[in-house]
Length: 280
View 1 (cartoon, rainbow, N blue to C red):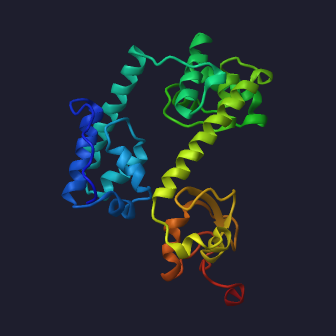
View 2 (cartoon, rainbow, N blue to C red; view 1 turned 90 degrees about the horizontal axis):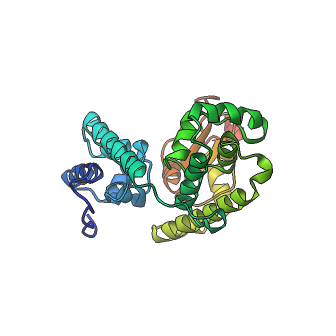
């Protein structure tokens, strides 16, 4: 089970009640976070943070956590929604102060800054932000109003293009994006440093650590579609035979299938471990 969990900061809050229910399910299964990670697609640290009571985790994390512990999904969904409403009320009643754009050093501060930008522009409705962002769709891509809402309430970590589309939607023209781009780059660099520290704490077998991740991906039947970021981090790959079945994998977990029967690509119907000669 590992070391004793830290106390839930405010157990009577909705966030605290959600955390307590998740911990109860974990204890009932006699799991530790590493065992639970084997039942889900998430890193043990992500699952531990979800049950910390220090914030509202995303629904996919909560859903997988609950599924791995055989908790009632409807009950957990209601607790999660109550925690989200509680957080929204707290942000409305006591919004955090935004730091200057040149002072942003992480995604939390960037999120507060972007929310303040929208507020200073008379809080345009999210549908209006979406329509305005259509003007730069070719440059930054689409920005659905649901994504604009998540950015404004700090429920997501925006990509650089999403942030710039959001700024356009708030009437900040692209020629004024320079300081915001640099702020995003600092926040993203800090995020990657944090992930690297998290990954360094996780056990990676020496034989896996020594292997080239790109060659390992090919053995698994995948072609990387983006630079490798880390063994425990999501990585976009495609089927190396048909190149059409694009998916997200975590190499540290995908490597477990090397010694199992071959999977079959749902697009080309070829065994992922077949060699070209065997396919012929």
